[in-house]
Amino acid sequence: MTQSKYISLVEIDNNNILLYSTFNTSLIVLPKQIYESIFVQQCYENDEYVSQLKSLGFLVEDDTAQLKQIESIRKQNLSSGEQVVNIFSTNNCNARCYYCFENGIDMVDMSEQTADATVEFIKEYYPQKKLKIIWFGGEPLYNFSTIIRITKALKEAGYLLSCHVTTNGSLVSQEIIDFLSLNYDRVSFQVTIDELGNDYGKIKRYIDCDVQIAFERTINACHLLIRNSIILSIRVNYLDKQIEAAKKVFMSLYDTFSYADKEKFLIYLAPLTLLESCQGCPDSSNHLLELLRFHYEKGVYKNIRSNKCDDLLSLFNLMPKGGACRAANKMHITITAEGKIFPCNRYAKYNNYSIGDVLTGINKNNSFYKFFYNWQVVEEKCKTCSILPICQGGCKALKTLYKKKDFVCQRKDIQSDLLRMFYTKLFNK
Ligand code: SF4
Ligand code: SF4
Image (cartoon, rainbow, N blue to C red):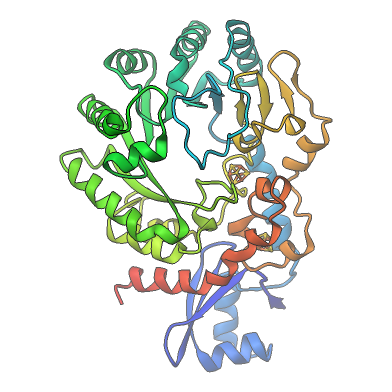
């Protein structure tokens, strides 16, 4: 008998310790002396507690079995789940945000030939006829003709489509909404608004609009989306030290769009680190606890899952996963405006990380392909890390592109705080 390696714990008061299995989400509160006798002194004579801890996965017969199970889930996750393709209709953009991780990319539109080759590639690569397209860029709406071309061809090929448009919002029009609503079963938009008024215009530095009217243009676009019942999330990017300013932006936007149906409308804060880490991954914030508390208080992300416990585990980043992120799935790839294929859009401007292209397909012998989609846990420190089932080795882009291996592990430092926050919210302490 031995202890599972995948346990997080926190002292919840002077007498009790909360144990959480990151492997299977079991929770147990143990009196301190019981915890010490079983987990510190490794005395397994208290039958009642020991059998309960065994059935919950805190004690195990063989300490490698759980790792094997984690690897098997990772393997399964690689090719299961939703079919999603991230397509850059263009690398070009009408804004010049200082923080854009694509700064330096070739500003080209997807050509008609590449669009047609993209359709042919999709028909071969995605066997099911249900497909989600994330329109990305650059500013995807800057080259809407490519969106029309690919959409029509995939519809003709019998695909049932849904889409998510990641946009700065400036070019949204009724015609665009009408086309998407007609051709996609589900349409959602993500619009980034980092500042209010003229400060917004100063950050975006649009090349087609004066600073003074840029904010109003984007706000009007959001109103238009809401009036058309389109699912809309507004993302407020902020630098780590400016979370208070970001909260003010959040509250102001919250008031502006207070009339929106909350089932179809969401505002959230997203930390920028300038380390170019995944901006969709709040793990990278030094203010993660504060951010999550704010999101909890404002009801962001509630009702995602079926019960409060799972909602809270998910909100506080405590839920085990099948892979480090959405990119840990071969069914979720990125195609750039040049037709190059990447496992994650972070690599889009680095051709040496391409795993293929739409004309020749994916090269499975490519060493980066093998590295990115390796389901085995390679790093020794990860194998025994208490949060491996949650972190899954972390963002590969951080490790490969930015050489920020240790940065990934920072979230371990706040694991107990996350657990305490989860516990207090779950039991309204
Ligand atoms: S990357 Fe760091 S935090 Fe993540 S599983 Fe590995 S050791 Fe743990
Ligand atoms: S590899 Fe990193 S940057 Fe890419 S999707 Fe995953 S977490 Fe984000």
